[in-house]
Image (cartoon, rainbow, N blue to C red; front, side):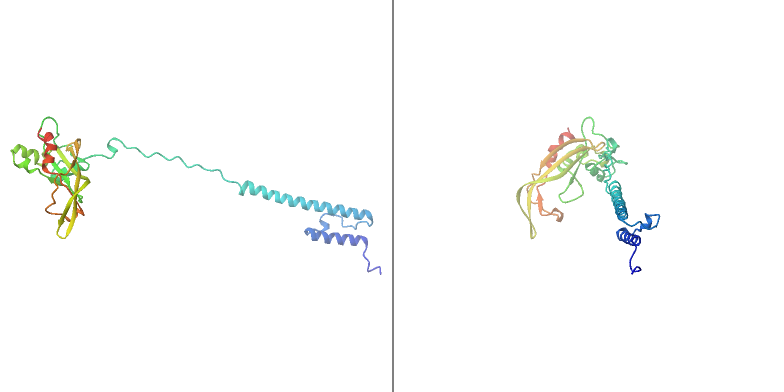
Length: 267
């Protein structure tokens, strides 16, 4: 019967070790360097209670410390928001002035043909050309762009150029290299409807043509004059170009151009 009973020391040691293992995998020997059996009696029970409370407190402190450290690292390292970085100031766009700005360009050669003079209506000038200074005459070439085209053609006022003297011919139909002025005639818009014009099986509407007449000096592309015009030729054209599109525009008559240019050309 004695062999079947457990001694108080064995019972307390085995029970405490089992409970510690169940709580955290710790063995009593890790905290009790002397594996001697605890004395039996009430004092032994109180000692076991104190030991349990101490171990539980240590475990709780360790757990709280672990969670506190993890929370601190998360806030200070992973959870913090990086400071906003402002975009670098944008550099202002470079400004252009003088020769660098867009504008008329000098040609690297003199006037050789009428095509060179047509370029004055765009952005070219010819420093070697004779200047329109002093008294008249100031020879002129008339350059016009027809509706629906991307090229310019020369226009001669036949009555002024060929019905008079040689001097008038040199003013109104000059040699290209001797021209001092270029008169650019460009269609800018349309006005009210005038009539329908039939061409074969097709019918096109004729409307008022609105134009801008601009006069430049060949040597400098200095603007000498500018005048809006409305075409007064309201007749249907004898030939209708396919490039004209569905709308026809009243043309500027020779007499209109002569009246606008005569004073600057002839004086």
